[in-house]
Structure formats: structure tokens, C-alpha cells
Amino acid sequence: SFNLHGRSLLTLADFKGAEIAHLLNLAADLKAAKAAGTELPRLQGREIALIFEKDSTRTRAGFEVAAFDQGAHVTYLGPTGSHMGKKESVKDTARVLGRLYDGIEFRGHDHATVETLAEWSGVPVYNGLTYRFHPTQALADLLTMGEVAGHDLRGVAACFLGDVGNNVAVSLAIGAVRMGMDMRLCGPRALWPDDAIRAALTADARASGGSFRLTDDPTEGMVGARFVHTDVWVSMGEDESLWPARVESLRPYRVDLDMMRRTGRDDARFMHCLPAFHDDQTEIGARLCAQFGLDGIEVSDEVFESPWSIVFDQAENRVHTIKAVLVATLGG
Ligand code: CP
Ligand code: NVA
Image (cartoon, rainbow, N blue to C red; front, side):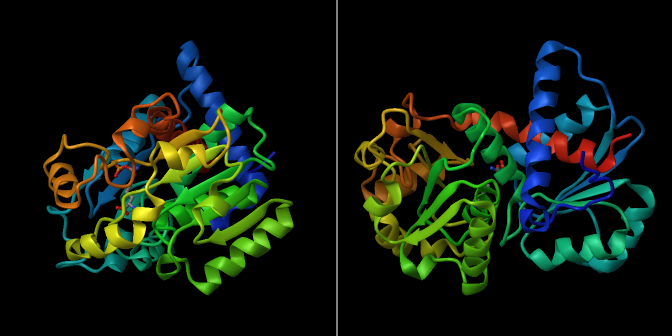
């Protein structure tokens, strides 16, 4: 059995494959217990600070519901209202919050901020998304794929299409290769992850018996893929003026029905961390779809709303996997 007590989660690269598997098994157990009404609160008396420099629906709600289900309390510190990074350094904020709280979640721009919080707070720190990594998302992605593929992910093929160097793609790939999956990142060379990440993914895949492929060819990336992932083409904190160039370079990686058919599999599944620009039901989505003449940007509405799509199972699994992280690192 694994003792993850007191550990921070800044990136899944800090967790061995067996530790990731342990968190996924715990998440599955906690999910089943909640459904059965037999969940035992193992975080009673725990206090958790939730720092958000950027917007969030799923991550904030995931941490809050996970904490409440387990008997813990949370404090939400939003983009305005605290002194952190303005009148008070991250290092001082870390030392203060570490005296008051048992754990700290951080979502924001710089990865260095979450590292500083972990270094100086003296309590477990959880990365709720930085520019570089989104590890709690990757855990939910792995749990969701495991539910569909039968819980053993070894050799299971997944392809992430699009902005393959972003936080979601890189974190998914780290988790997937450590679980022995056949992981493909498929997108334009200009957006490929850096050499250090590529070398780490290759080495991790070799160590686990999985495989890792980076390609700009959608046919090569998609053939045989059981799971097809994508994400927004311009991430939070990136310049909105990037949109036309991103659409131009990522258009060949857009997930539509023809793209799904390139898997050659009837049982392929579509996944997206959300939020997704798949229709014109938001102001930004409507503007982008009109500007670029598309029905959905990174994914067509047809695929998003199809039986291939398991995006809301994936969203639900945010709470179960975040809960597993909290229970494993803070639980009594
Ligand atoms: N997928 C994800 O992290 O969603 P939120 O931005 O809503 O937290
Ligand atoms: N890559 C996206 C993920 C959002 C959950 C972003 O960073 O905005």
C-alpha cells in the first residue's frame, strides 16, 4: 500500500505509475461509496485554501464538493480580494496560509507560484492548473478512460489533437505513459512540447512498457485510437490576438466526424477537459464560429453531442479524483 500523506501534487511527473494507479483506485472506491451512500468522511476538521488567479467551474467545484463530502472546510481566495502577489509576496502568503490551513490549492499563471507555495507553506499544495501543468485534470482523464477500457490502461491508445504543448496535453501524456498507455500527441510542430518534456515522455513510456508518439500527421496519430482528446486552441492567459493564427495552424486537427472515423474504431470515444467552443451558445464561441465559419472550433458540435462523447463523465470524475488526492494526502 502507498503512503502519500503530506505530499503535494504540482505535476504528475512527481508520482510513480504505481502511485497514480493507487490514486485512481482510491477515486473509483470513493466514487462507488458516494453512489452507494456509504462514504466515510476522512477529512473532518481539515481546512483547505483554494486560490484562483484564473476562472474555473470544474476545478473549484471539484475541490469544494470533494472537501464537503469528506467533512473538510474550504476558503475560496479569488483573483481579487487577497494580498497575494500584490501587497504581499507569494512566499509570505505561503507561510501565513500554511499556519492556518492543512492544504492549499492554487490555480494561476506561473508554475513558479505553485512551487513557491509548496516550498514555503509546509502543507500539501495542489496544482489546480498553471500555464505548464494540469495534473488533477489528467487524473480525471485517466479515471474516465479506465472506466471505459476496463480499468487496465496498459496498451490502450489515446490521441490528443491540437495544442499538444499545453498544460492539459502534457499532463495527460505524462499520466498516460506512466500507466503504460499508447499515447500520441498530434499537432503542428510549432506547438510541440519542449525537448525536456519529450525526452521525459519517451523515457517514461520505455520504463512502463507503454509508448509515446509525437506527430503532425493526423492519420498517424489517430489510427487505432480508443480515446480522442482535445482542448481549447488558445488557453487562459494567452493573448486573444493569437486566435486567427491558431485556427489557421490547428484547423487540420479539429475533431469532426471525419477525424473520429480516422481511428478506424466504432468504440472510439471523444474527450475534452472543458470548457469547449463547440457551438454558438456563448458570446466568445459565437464570435469565433462566425469569424472562422466553423460549427464548433476545436470540436464540431456534432461530435461533442454524439454518442462518442464522454465529456460529462470526464467532468464528473474531476470531483472523485480530486477527492482521492485530498484523502490520500490529508486523510486521517
Ligand atoms: N477542465 C477544467 O479545469 O475546468 P475549469 O476551468 O472549469 O476548472
Ligand atoms: N488549456 C486550458 C485548460 C482549461 C481547463 C487553459 O489553460 O485555459
